Length: 128
Image 1 (cartoon, helix red, strand yellow):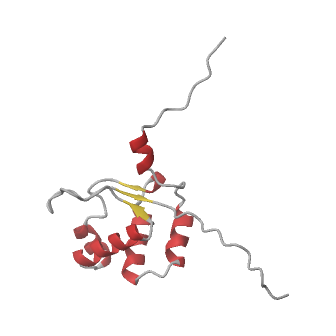
Image 2: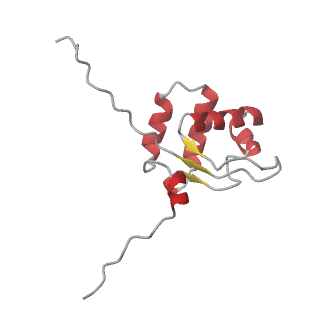
Image 3: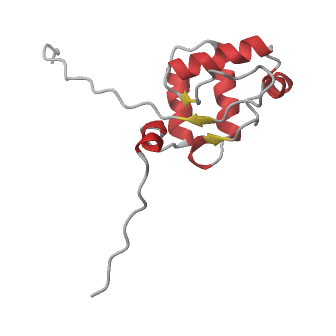
């Protein structure tokens, strides 16, 4: 009798950090463009999507560094940091906590996350 291969086990801590849905660039960009975001947020989001690797991953100290984003977009470092915070609040990206970091450390890695689709019940008083 042969044993069937088992899927790899993931630790609970790693599972909690993973994005909720599979990253698809077109779907992610559509979600960004459909939201009421500031133009700086959209600009930063589209640049991140362009440079994101498979799974929506941007490595530590990558394009998300404020000096690199300034060279690409013309946004100030403060505007870039604010746009990243806004995108994280909107559920469009995930970054490890910045607690305990010094300003000179490398930029944190980013994972672009696809927001969960919202379920909307059918309107019961729809007109024919």
